[in-house]
Length: 519
Image (cartoon, rainbow, N blue to C red; front, side, top):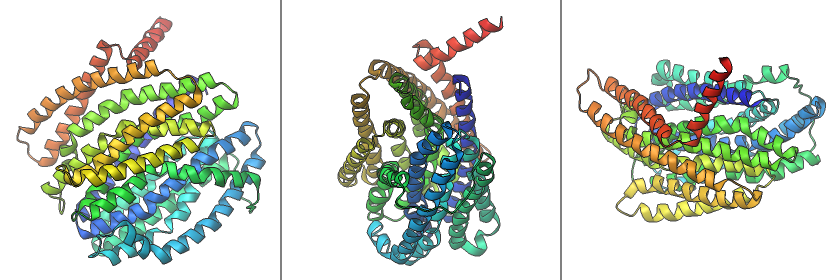
């Protein structure tokens, strides 16, 4: 695809993902309003983290590992072998996954004792919900295999749409059936979501040439390489979830009721906010990273990675500052109703701000991981991932006992991601030999300056709006968010133009060139 086509594809994918995340916000707001910060909420959220959210890392690992394999066959127009590889992976993984599911169902009480040692009051409820959601692993695996197949065919729109039906199903359930079936019905609906995410992709896969045929060969060389590669990639893609599940949730469950739910509610906003940009860009660019290296064009590859990093600096820095500044009205607007009171708002807003601090680190790590995978290097991402886990454990252990208290736990995760991203960038530069450090630093500093000036303006505007009386709290909070977002965006662009930030200058030059061409 040409550069313009690539930009358009990224824009469409980000737009669809943004809409999907917005619907997801509505879903999460309804879940929060129904459950609040109760023991039921903690049980559901921990079960979700222990099953679906953990399995997502496996699904993402499958997608990342399979895309280059599928793309390689399709580049040679070899649909027969592409289907053979995919069918072997489907059948072989299903055997493995069925085994994991059975073991998970049998031993979930023992696992939950480890990851939630403070869950005595609602332990059996957590076990039951975990057992309901555990079979989702089967459909997560199938869904992500088809995501890889479609993206390997350079079809990005359908994978961006797969969450729509499931989100609508959850919303429908919460409105009409929650009072009758409660949190157990919610767990069943969560399982059904993943069945739908798999099924919605099948027609598109068939349309571009996929045909199912039973083929299973554990000794197949491609499959063996797939397994060897996917294990470290699953670990790396799951680093954030491992931090939440093994460190944040474990420490949080021991120091007070509702803390696990606060972490979950904050992540329901934070993760979609950062991933809508990061994954929207890397989903399209990862196949292109591979394409550059297949043709031995290392310079094009490193330039592409540097360009993506600069784009992330420009986009994520104002998002970080903005999210911290409007965290209170945002949490209030989404969750504050029914069981979710002002104390819960304050708690979750503090957690959200702490996680938002590490947004740029999250984005940089994801881009560089994709770069390392394109280089067929999985050892370095694993090394950095282990460093992040160790740092988070140490920081959390000491900060939770400091004056910061509970908020020291999410803050530790952010600090670990930031330090980890710096380590990763240094190792990536060493691996490729050439990287525009000066250009990256220049873009980072200018984006920070523009973001700080934007933040000062948004801070005063937010306080002015909050000082006025409104007919309802919801209108007050949404007005604060919309006005701060619009004014903040305008201020950021103005300051970016004044200090000649690279991304802004590039867009202006493209606009001038287009106008000159039209004339």
